[in-house]
Image 1 (cartoon, rainbow, N blue to C red):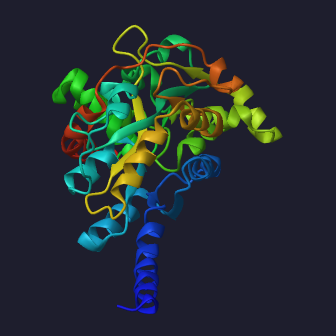
Image 2: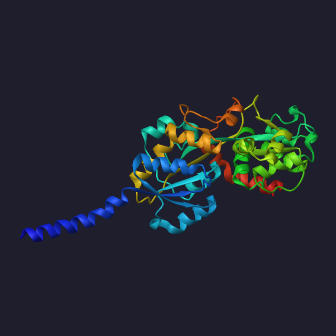
Image 3: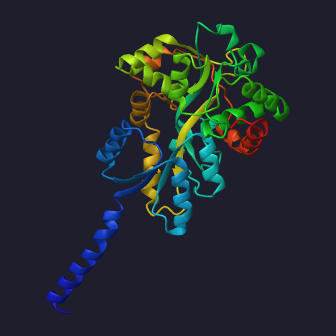
Length: 341
């Protein structure tokens, strides 16, 4: 074989190898985390590893449906979604592939990850109570169960009962109280509504500040977001209402997570696992806390968020997040029965 022909064949082989190597530096991320502050997190991963992120952002339900429709041809490597209810749905749809990682197992607490590595929680948030101190005494809102007290008739605002944030809380109540007592509690909450459930968590806080209701539930990071706001109207809302850690004398405040996992048909599996491990690093954990006011799940992560830190220490419900997912069908039936629309 001539030297010219050998050189030509070598050039062809090199050309064919380049796309494969290029693919090795790519991660296809489907994310329902629509927070601008996550941009720094993704940029840091690319800067650190050289792996470029192709990102598709949409709502949790849209992403789940898209991946299911794409089937074995899905380009998704990693799915990031919000709330235990949605992680459980993705697991039931068999979208995840198990990951065995010493880094993830050592850094992420057992109650914030799937026991078989189907998914992992990377940040946590608490479901807290906001109340109007002019209309409600603190002792009337020390527990989630207090939302059903006759004294709180006509005072309660919530999201719709079928929203994942609410379903996860109802799932926790079923686990702690049993289904019969949880249903009795939910009927009491519905009987105490100030108006039909609607809107997001920030809407609930504003409704308390405006006097539309006197008690509401919100995820903690929405409250801290208002605390950090420079807008005068947001400052007025924060000054008008009060914040309560529920169930500090009982099971602790209900916790939830933002998390994700490796996709079953991931074309870039190694990069996906590397990304998941990066999300458990102190650097990435700090982005969650400082950027979106969520608590790191890794204890060694440093937080530089004075407003988040100002909330202080509290007793968190240690319930395994996976248990919430197992209770979801019962929770959905329960909210339907009690008319929590």
